[in-house]
Amino acid sequence: MSADLVLINGNVITMNPSNPHVQAIAVKGDEIMKVGSNDDITPLIDKNTKVIQLDGKTVIPGIIDTHIHVTDFGRLLLWLDLTGCKSITDIKNILRKKINATSAGKWILGRGLNEALSEANQFPTRFDLDLVAPNNPVILYHQSKKLCVANTKALELARITKKTTILSKEGIIEKDPDTGNPTGIIKGKAVDLIWKVIPEPNTDDLLKLTHLALSKIIEAGITSIHWMILSPLEFSIIRKLDRKTFPLRIYLIVPFELWKKELKFRVSSSWQEDSIKIGAIELSADGYLASKTAALFQPYADSSKSNGKLLYTQKTLNFSAVKIIQSGYQLIIHAMGDKAVEAALTTIEYFDKKIYDVTSRIRIEQAALINKNFLEKMKNQKILVSVQPCVINSEFKTWAAIEKLGQRRARWLFPLKKMIDNNITVLGGSDCPMEPLNPFIGIQMLVDRKFFPEEAITSTEALEIYTINAAYSTKEENCKGSIKEGKLADLTILSNDLTSISSSKIGSINVTNTIIGGKIVYSK
Ligand SMILES: [Zn+2]
Image 1 (cartoon, helix red, strand yellow):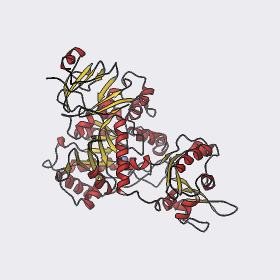
Image 2 (cartoon, helix red, strand yellow):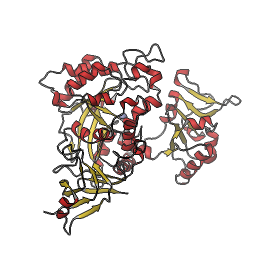
Image 3 (cartoon, rainbow, N blue to C red):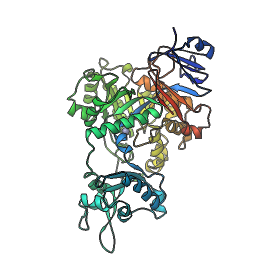
Image 4 (cartoon, rainbow, N blue to C red):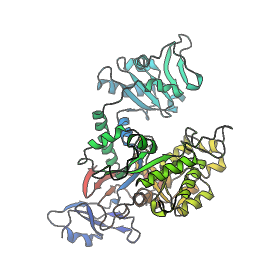
């Protein structure tokens, strides 16, 4: 029997410990037919076989992103990216290009205003934006999302005038000291005053944007995603997806409150179409470190009062978790602070063995701040821990975790090496669009870890997080996550070998091809 597709003369990292490196792969239909040396695979080539000459390029199992917000990513692709701007002139140039391609009256949104601009005294005001965009409402956001600048048209639509006043806890509407007119710069919660007047794209536009997002995801070498649903609107978009053009494998994760309200506790398997299904329901035990809503035992180090808080009582958390498992879904508990992680672990201990055993693959999202005691429990209960490597870096770097938690606690923030050494299964995702989509940037963060570098892991361990561990988390380790005979032919071809390149360069590795189910869906 001949192969449909053969990849030959390469550096194949299989992630199969019994046969870790091979030269060539043969594919039949959507499955891997054989792996081995060039000599093993060549006889499977006939006149109908498509052959990819790898010329030493690296092949890895298709990347699985276990945490991505697809529709939001699509929305953001429409936004102007100002992250590289160093001056008001740079911003105006980007804005001008967009204005020329946009009809009058349509909103223009941008993101990525940064500290460098403020430091260089180059932060724009409404007047700078008005010069380029007199007829379109424009709003540009700072990286922190807690600060924006709006032009005159946008201020008018939001009815923000000289007379608008807000409470100081709601932020600041900056005003010119001489005239009292708003400068367009808005800080804190008050940014919502403008956000709420921006019209929602209609379903057709959102579908187009979601397709655009899917194509970017495939280009990044990702073959499977765990799609974190944020709004019920996404269900109607998912039903209309063009699955032929975008055959990405999709696992939906629905927040508990949305499941309860929109899907009325629907039972698993009643909502499955092709390769899309609701796989998991996520219960949030607490909020986020960045907004100091993650629940901690001891207050945040820079404020004596705030501890964050648990979003449910222990009793409600237990009850809701049982409901999820009994309905046939994977249970995910978002728990970021140590108090929330404890609540999650207590819930898991509470389960009756009839509904739960260690094979249930319960996942804690984040498990950010832990301690030695938790490590032991997580290991014994075979908990899966889902992290987003770029988030880890942001917590330390942007949020200044050492300052906000204190050195002693920050040492136990995302201690991945300790988790892996304790045989805890860790999975990785991007949290795109809040963080970069590129999985190799994520892998670099883990291998070349800057904060508490003793918690850095090897490139092979990091790759496990995005492949075999992620496959295991959805009980798909028999068909995904490694390159092995009989598994799905989901493959990613790379310009460089991430296990031999210098760790500081992993993030710049290029994806040259993405293959899903034996079909080449992306070629650079
Ligand atoms: Zn997220």
